[in-house]
Amino acid sequence: MARIGFIGVGNMGGPMSANLSKAQHQVRAFDLSPEAVAAAEAAGATAAPTVAEAVKDAEIVVTMLPAGAHVREVYMGENGIFANAPKGTLFIDSSTIDVATSREVAAAAEEAGFAMLDAPVSGGTGGAEGGTLTFMVGGDADAFERGAKAFDAMGKTIVHCGSAGAGQAVKACNNMMLAISMIGVAEGFNLADALGIDRQIVYNVCSTATASSWALNTYCPVPGPAPASPANRDYQAGFTADMMLKDLRLAQDAAQKAGVSTPLGSEAQALFALFSNMGSGAKDFSGIIEMLRGKV
Image 1 (cartoon, helix red, strand yellow):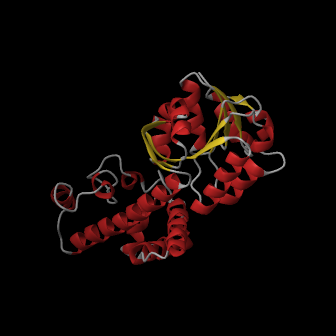
Image 2 (cartoon, rainbow, N blue to C red):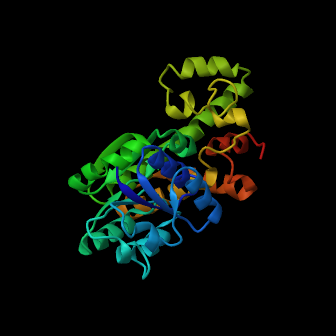
Image 3 (cartoon, helix red, strand yellow):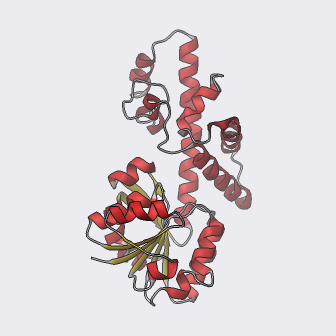
């Protein structure tokens, strides 16, 4: 088993850390939140008072942080990971950040003699808790193989997407597609309601016809048809609208820099920004159906 430093043990990182501990890895956890560290410790990790202490003897370091600025500071700062991790340590950044920052930090890691993978995830808190996350991984193939012991404890589907930054790029594409799909599903159910069609019938037909999608089949935004959907829990978040908005902004930033037209992605960003500004950012992103039907 591996010695693993884990930086950022919040809503996603906490259960990911717990699954590493469950797999008998030796985890040292750090977070700015004492409550988050205490929860990781209760799940089997050793609490670390600083980033330096978390990584000082690590074979692997996993980070799950809010944004690119945090990733850059935690890795490249004066008291950060690069300055304190042993030579040969493998870094796995599972934060969802912009491609440019991801590649910048990976290049700095390589220059300092470290291997680094960008490995954002899909699956939300449920996937993190169940150890069923999908990891989209960018970086060197040898580093990807070295990371298998950690990935296998935290996820179900681990895909090597290409070189540094490729994981972040695929995540941006995936979540832009998901947001667009969810809006389409929501509009379809709103139209069916207005036409007096039973929602279960709509689900039974569309989930097995050409409208079939994960947003419809698994995460259906109306209560009833899909038992695991947040719609059955008053849109208690598995993946918040604010997090979806963050990812849509990353996708639009990438599209602009690449000179690619994404009109539906742009519109999805505008709609989720409106939903968030109405005070619904902490709700599950599927709750946007409420705004689209005029209930927010």
